[in-house]
Image (cartoon, rainbow, N blue to C red; front, side, top):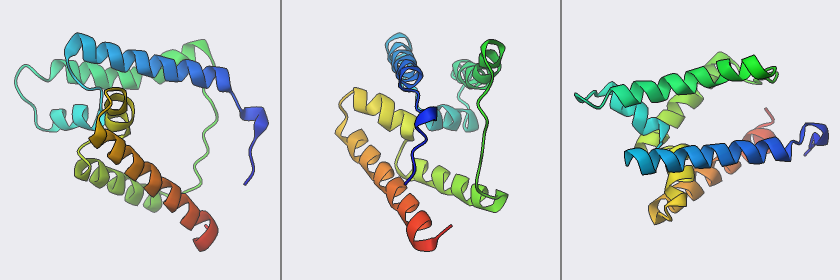
Length: 144
């Protein structure tokens, strides 16, 4: 394993984590809702009258964030070492997993753990374990 220590940025990472935590906490306190992306998007796929506006605003905020960031600083270089078919399969598997697990990393990992939810602890341990196992198999056994 190789670690790029020049790219290690603990202070910006801590600041980003704090912003995510504060935003999730404020969202729950002010709206009584969990800031889980799969739940927000799922609600847009099955719209309920009076429940669409905040969901659209939430998604627009997610899309606007990198645009606003770009006004203040350069966006980081992106490097994706997978082809389109692999990304499509991965996206479908993530979608299936979030549906099967009744939530995603933001819902369970950020919001659920902060509420001390046992269900979210189990879900987070499961998807983190699956991620670790997948990386190990792909990098060390399959050799991709």
